[in-house]
Structure formats: C-alpha cells, structure tokens
Image (cartoon, rainbow, N blue to C red; front, side, top):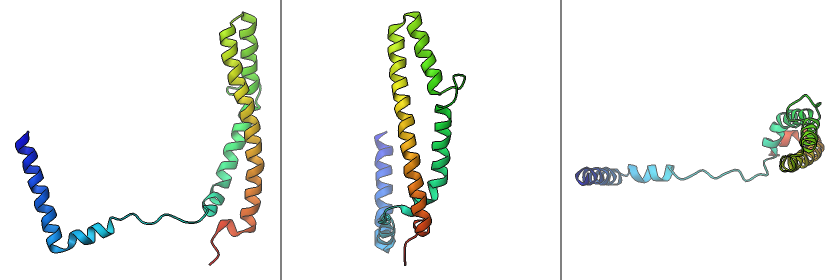
Length: 134
C-alpha cells in the first residue's frame, strides 16, 4: 500500500509541475476562483416564487382546516386527544395535546404568512417583479 501511495504522490507532483511550467496551471487556478454571489436583496427571485408559495400555504391551510376525517387536520387531532382522555391515557393525551397546540399555532402562522405574501405580491406588481432598474 505504501508503494502505491508513493507512486500516486509522484504522479500528482509531476502533473502539477508540468502544468505550472506551461502556465496552464495558473490560468486554471484563476478560473477556479468562485464567482461573486448576487449582492441584491433577492426581490426578483422572491417575486418569481410568490405563486408557488401562495399555493403551498393555501394547500396547508386547507388541510389544517379540513374535517375530522382528513389526515393532518386540527379537528382530527382534537378528536384523537379527546379519545385518549376518555380512555384514561394521560401520557398519550399530553403528547397529542402538545401536537395539537403546535398545529393550532401553525395555522395562525400560515394565516399571517398568507397576508404578508399578499403584500409582497402587490409590491412585486408595482415594481416590475423585483427587476433591477438599470
């Protein structure tokens, strides 16, 4: 294994030396530097994503507000909490109640995000979808 490692190191060193001697290595190293990232606020990218974000939020709210028969709904989880309390499973009821509290908070947060996204949509329409002014 040491012989292969030494051979590999020797071949790599020879290749680097050959590249540097011909000047190709310096050009390749200059090209390998990362390009500078965008310096803007990302408005254009956000404006492009507004319809997709709106659909995602609406779909999540629809699921949360669905009836007791729908998976992921607040009412279904509330029914599960009630059933656990009736059965006397306090540990399960506590766990499910914590999940229910989180899900109710999620519904509130998504409603807020939906309102904020409407304001972003209005801004994007007024500012050419966030395109930079040249």
